[in-house]
Length: 510
Image (cartoon, rainbow, N blue to C red; front, side, top):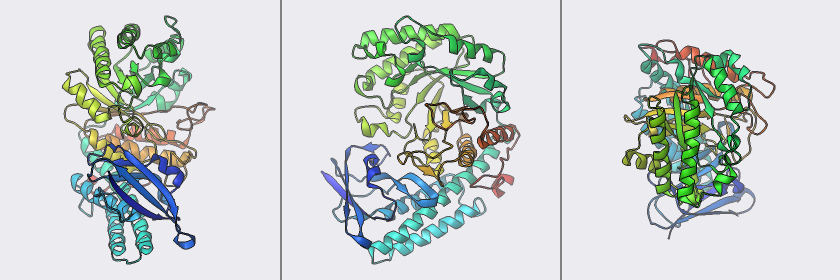
């Protein structure tokens, strides 16, 4: 069994309670099965944390964990890939080294290596590299760690600014001839909310809306359907110009399946027949009102009987074939609920997002788009910075498929420690700033056709990620959402000034 150890000091933002979520990563970035333990060492000024990681194969591995970097945030970071060894690595040094290397790689890939393309980012990057160089010459492990932690803080700031500047530059190029289509900006409409929200300018101006489909709510008992909420929304949407996405038709998350369906999950044939009957009911009822079908979600990351790859492929094919038979003109989307593949750490027997997508392509299953959920605190947990969001979005870019961000959201009030924070505690103004940067970063990617905000309004059981609070009052993010939509519909869109990048970079203006 291979092993390696890391040393961090007690005041460097490493919380023993959070190390339960620490993960080993393989070369391709997927979670690596292993064991991670931590214990306090030393006393007083020399107190620290010693982290020990063990895994089966003697290959290089990286450690990913949540670190509190003060004003930068409490975010998920990773070390470089490292060979096994007994002598402890400096945790802060390896985290900083990875982020500096990642900045160099993405600066080259994005064509942002010219100093004029992102001057603020480059200035901070050079400072981070200088601090890391100084750290490498320190003889004292504690002094080295202090400098490396400061290098890491500056490098995270620099890389986020690089991602923001790149987004504005490439948005102007992507939509140079004409602005983005109205469907590039969308929102998710919870059935429990009132359809009067469509009268709000921010929602009325969306070109695409998503109507979530929760089987447990519609058919709580076999054969007893309650379509009232969905029907009310679909009637209201029939009077507007919105395109409607509905689904997922097949969502294997246990909290979304009725109890009577869960009872059949061990019987593959009966479960498949039940799924087919449900899909037939939904598509037959709403095919005249739906423009895009989300046919499957939750297979990448499922556990237990639902983690069986062959069953996942069979059910995805079933939904795809049925939609093509009953609604042949409608595009089809498959959704990745866990795009970072974090569930593989908890359910190593399940398929990760990349394996699932590769299998349905190899099996010849028809689908037009891939959807990913990027809900901070839910599908993205712990919190990631915007540079990591940009890197993830790049991984999904393919010339063979379109991309839709089916849910994007961030909270407007402080979250739990496990979920993290971004550049300070979450607040209404911080949510608005994050929204502006995230929309630009995602839509700047090639083949990314639409980004839907995942919460229109706060609900008792859905946190604080809505554009409107529970009383219907708009948050600062509503204004940013509207302004972003208006800017994107103009040729060579110039977004309003953001927290991390100016409204117009020299490269975008040239």
